[in-house]
Length: 181
Ligand SMILES: CC(C)(COP(=O)(O)OP(=O)(O)OC[C@H]1O[C@@H](n2cnc3c(N)ncnc32)[C@H](O)[C@@H]1OP(=O)(O)O)[C@@H](O)C(=O)NCCC(=O)NCCS
Image 1: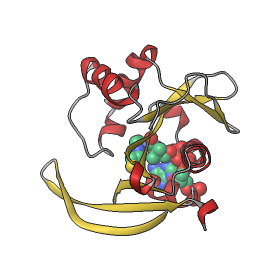
Image 2: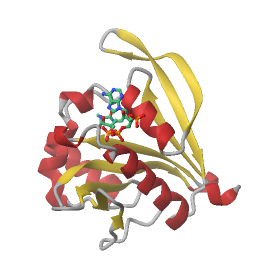
Image 3: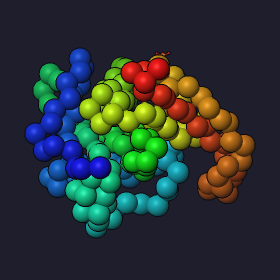
């Protein structure tokens, strides 16, 4: 996949999405290490500035990950990030991921809107056929969000992960491009 076009802005109602840049590094590292985010991610180790810079260079700037910053429409305040990763060009599929880093953004429909916007970008602009998302079973907000954004639960994997001394279930969500039906 080619990297995202630098001047791309995806406009929604409450929010818009813009491509992540190196200038967002401090923000992204701070958000990604917040306990509310870490506890809902599979990868639990702290993310350093260096780790994030490597991620940008090796994944985002090469087009292997399409990552956006979610910004509030009214004042451009950055609230979190949404992204596509694990592109499989042959199968026209990828995986979506999301986190909000600013507590005041939670519970207002912003996560749902961001996932709807990135799914529309994946299906409309990139022409993908399928998106998937992996959600820890206890993450009720994310499960609900994905259902509201048009994903369906495709599998409930029992004791799939061993995290902090406990086995955890993982839910697989999938969404097929409505234009391909
Ligand atoms: C998951 C996350 C993105 C949700 O974003 P959000 O903007 O707060 O979610 P929304 O406001 O769009 O709400 C989506 C649904 O979840 C529900 N919800 C929100 N917070 C909830 C909570 N703490 N517990 C239960 N349900 C919750 C909402 O009520 C809504 O459902 P409804 O419309 O039926 O009422 C956000 O909580 C987050 O960033 N969490 C940390 C990182 C994370 O979990 N990422 C996803 C990994 S798979």
